[in-house]
Image (cartoon, rainbow over all chains, first blue to last red; front, side, top):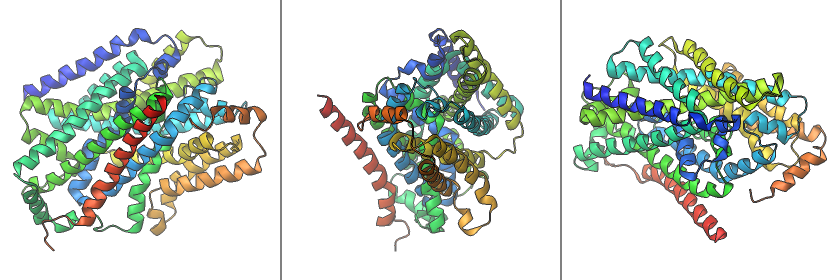
Length: 485
Length: 37
């Protein structure tokens, strides 16, 4: 490993910490710290939503899956892109308007409590608990991925790599809050995009033309060119089903709630979807070209396909930047998740339950301390390098998608929905995700999110209809949002 | 079938959904701008 890559890395990490320090003084209120005072412009909203969404999965997991199995993996790409598009199209603007009009809600539990005028606090407690549980695990998986990157690039011991990666993310999240996280996500999004486009383009030139690349892939295994190869109906539905997860991811929905005006949503949508579509194509191409490139010396771990390709193809200075992009992908997800956890503790538990009269300074302090507390628990979970990164990600993604997705959608669009319906939907969704795969095989091999989402929706319908009508003021608030939101 | 070629169906599933989604987003943006003007 050479000093050029290390220097690029260090400059990059220092820049991130500088960002945190630059935004330190802007955090006067908890709303500033958690949502940046709702001042995000379209470009930052779009790329930070994309970057915090995609995580290391985009640069390590997806290329790895295509490298190992071929083009039959594109179903997940189609599912995710469709889900993200629907989320921008139908959820973004309406959630932005609704969350501000319901007591200026700055977190999802906050929003749900105000939306249903729940005085019992039970919606807040249940939703904040779901958030803390799944995100601590999710964050741990991100820290493992980051540590593995440091470990493979610099040959550092795993524990040292884990601590360095976690340390940088915690420092800039702790200091800068939402604005620092969103702006670093924005630059990280650009870096990820450049990395994903340049590497496969270089390789296509390396093969001189497209058809010799295809021959190279076919020589390894012709079925890798077939989108249906070894795919069952359950398999295709499971991969497409990933798209359902978008409606319930708190770290992505937070970006929608923070945009300066709902009028900026269509522009943010174009930037966000454009970024996503081309990044996904790039990631598929990285894995695909990797099949031919590593034909003679197949990689032991498929997920290292992009890492290895970068180190072999590029000059060390460029390689350092591209490797920093992978680190970005991991960090931009971890930072957003830490911040949502911190908001669940400061806003939902501390202010909501313990000290409703707490002042701004006190809440920002609690929020900052929670970032450190959650990071420490995640570090403990991540300490064992044998942790399975991708399985945990899939599990947390399904957990949020099934417990919050239907609740958010119905709460935005169904006038007649009640507090009981919301509670039933969240609990059923989470339970189905936890239990589904333990029930057997066959149908139960389906990705948990699909049955979880369906059963949660049914629970919302049944419990809302049987629980009596929502109060007059809830209905009035719903009507005041209008149909254009 | 020539092994080295991607079938029409594969090309379809690879590109059509992604491009459609992108184009729909652009159309939505243009419509929102017209509405504002």
